[in-house]
Length: 246
Image 1 (cartoon, one colour):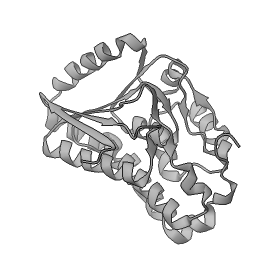
Image 2: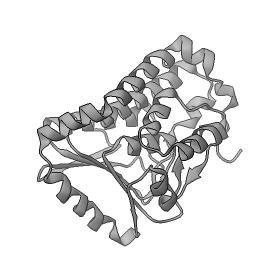
Image 3: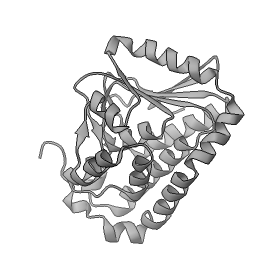
Image 4: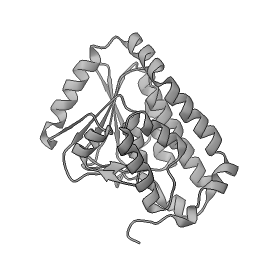
C-alpha cells in the first residue's frame, strides 16, 4: 500500500485514509493508491469508509500544477485516472461512506458524490465544481455524476458558475446527506455503519446496479468520448488554468 494511503480493516469495514502530508492532492499516484485500496477492500468484502487523515482538508482536488504545465498527456493521465476511480467507487458492490472534515475541491467532491452515504463536519469548509473559476470546463463524467445526486438548480449553479458550498448548503444541494458538529463525526460514522451492516449485501449490490446503470453508462460514454488525447488536447485550454494565489 502506498504511503499516501492508510488501510485499516476491522469487523467488515475498511477505513481508507488519505494523507499526503499536505492537501491530499489528487495526483496520479494518489488516485492509483486509492484504486488499489478499493481493490483490497473488495477482496476483503468490506464496507468502505473514505476519509482524510488531515483535519481541515478532504482533498484539494486534481494537481493544478500538472494542468498549468500545459502538458496534455500528463493532465489526461491524471483526469482519466480520476474518472475511472469515481466510476469504480460509484459501482463498488458494498456500501460506502465518505467523510468530509475539510475542503473538498472538485476531484475530492467527485469522490464524495460517488459514495452511498456522505457526512461532513460543520465548519468553514467548501465543496463543489469550481472548475470554471480557474479556467477549466468540468469534465462530462463529473457532470453526469453530479447530475445523479444534486438538485437541478444547484447543479446548474455549481457547473456553470463554479459556486462552492459549505456543509449545510451542500446538504440542501444534495452533495451531502448529513452535516454534524465536528465533535459528533465519529458518532455519526458509527450510526451510519450500524445501518450499513444491517443491509443484505447481495441485494445492495443489485439495487446499486439497477439504480446507477444509466449514470454509469453516461459516465463511461463521457470518459471514452472526452478523455482521449486527441479530444482532450483539442477541447481543454490548459494554458488558461489559474493557480491559487495568482
